[in-house]
Image (cartoon, rainbow, N blue to C red):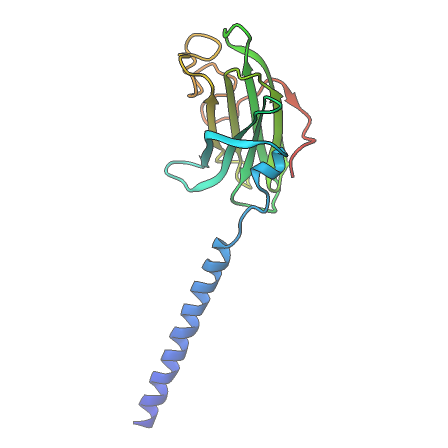
Length: 200
């Protein structure tokens, strides 16, 4: 009888230890967040635009690996865009961000700026004076091994537009032929690429 009681006590202790081992690491992993905030990175006066937060997923229906943010400063009439990681924080992985402003006559690509580099927390900020014109913003995050890119894009102030820059490029969808469109799973070459001097 005593041996049976001791055996039950040992099994209970083992079960408790196993539960502690599985629960604590999960809680610790979920507590890890990006210490940087979009408003702080873009600077004073910048606020997120409605619909300007785009989740970035690797694969389908893969989990969210980061977010693409678009902010606006009403005083300076500038947009600010950045790609912020939500996974592999602290590990440098290839990350891209780009901002494109419509031409003055609304005929398509006016001017743009993009950047790519290996960052631990975010790429950006890319800021352009947009004067209230239609803008398109894009971002991409690679996994640690350089595969499975997560892509997101969006537009702002483009009401009434049916395409972006040329026929066959659906607005906000990265149509075939767009330099911002992920084609065949490869990373698109982005015009106006600047040295990776920004980002952390």
